[in-house]
Image (cartoon, rainbow, N blue to C red; front, side, top):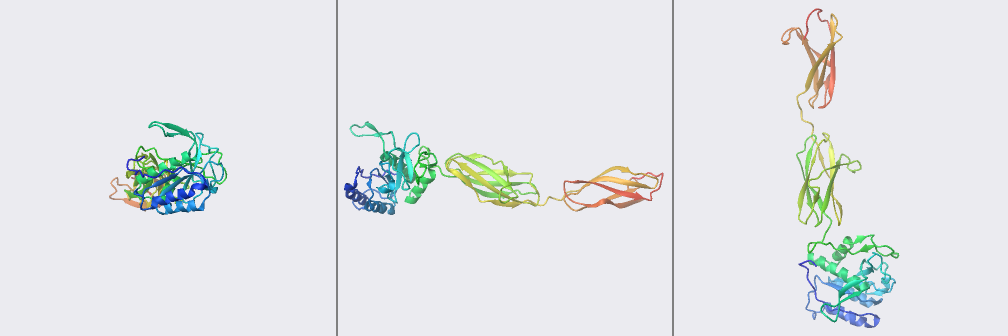
Length: 387
């Protein structure tokens, strides 16, 4: 049990059969009476009893749960429908069926839609009467029910003020689903699980969320992520892409990729090789033994590429005749509309006897593509050297 959980003293009852329900109901009403000096908050009542269905007993249990006391009841050992028994059929109680070591329902355990959860009930070793160290091994849903009551007490000890419904929701969420075989129709397949945190807080699904998106450029961005691991090793993953539905998303590395503990922390993602002027959508996924959580999607828009100087290189002239030539070159725009021209003449310093003509293509754009450009020149003088 967690170190800060309250131990709530209660009167122990061992009553079966419909003939003694009046005494049971009186005992339940005593719990809420001024005569009971024990705390009535953060209390868990285990009812390892059973008998025919009783509306009066079920109503007495409802008075307890309405007062904030969690009531856990054995499903009963008649191999029948738990809804026909009391307190197993009490709607406000957490009704517990029994399983064996093989994770199958015990042959004696009642089942049906009134069973909320299963717990080990066969071959249970416990203390006994007669000596301080006496033990006894017993079978029954009366053994399964205290397992769930103990789990509820741990949760209440770690979450003071939790309501009856919150206790039930926690036990339901933490239970192992689909582990039990050979169940009857309309019976839940949920096996009790309580986090083995050695007195620590119960394991809960992680919390993951975007904290900030910074250092956005035309091809990169840095994303900071808020994480609460939920008291268990939590694996983080990151999906992103231009598709807001994430059907064609990519994944990126989160640092660190796994976090643990119960304190909020951060992780980060450095995105690169992005396309400029593009809206990117992203989401964070956290997984621990208690569940998988997907954050709300975030988005950012990459910037326009920065304008840089264009690149221009000459290539050998072709189609040379006595009066014409084709000038050739290669050009790249500097992420801005760029015009390409050739300058030629007989002066190597291009100060005199120089002409400027448009290249083909004349207008180019983009920051990565190289364009082959040329210009056909006529009416030059034969026998002269041109630059």
